[in-house]
Length: 108
Image (cartoon, helix red, strand yellow):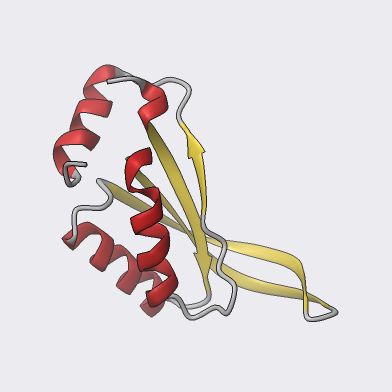
């Protein structure tokens, strides 16, 4: 088990309800071991305008091998036309934490 086999997936959404739905489905399907949510202020270009909005950021701990499945699942559940779905691989983590992620997610 190498740290690089694991990662953190991030997405943002516009409502608590959508954040809760994404969280619940991914946890129930054992695609992620943990989801953390925080409210953030975002500013971005969208359809030739600069948008300022409050969003909910979800950070999910999982295995890199599950990324495509998670990306598809989030795409089906998300309220945005073009949701951010990015994964940052881990470059280091304590082995016990990685083992916990492995135990709490589906086998690949």
